[in-house]
Image 1: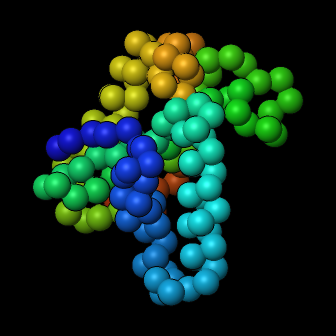
Image 2 (image 1 turned 120 degrees about the vertical axis):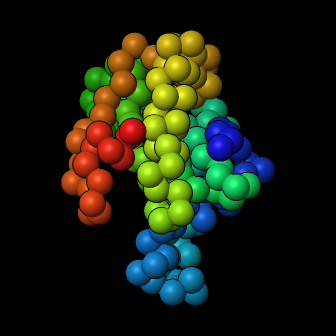
Length: 148
């Protein structure tokens, strides 16, 4: 397994994972295409202004899972954002061949390690606090199994 921060060079790999909702809409669906382009612009802006806020896990040379995190100070809907606080927005491993093989846990451990040593999206500063929210998982994995 290989982990990489998202960059302009591998951004399209993210959409292979993150657009898992393509299972519910045809690839040529105009709404899906518009959504991908909006997300592409947002991520390119984030890369330009703050650095990477997404990591991709590759298994067998293919993108298999991703984790998305955002500095609280970049979230316009928070009225008094805290400095050096990260919000975990999404962790996603949609492919049956990548599930239960440790991609989610590896991404989470890598993020926690970088929170301690310094994140590019925080200008290299360590994270003081990582905000996560439990979520309902639509599969058979419990949260501990998902992150295991």
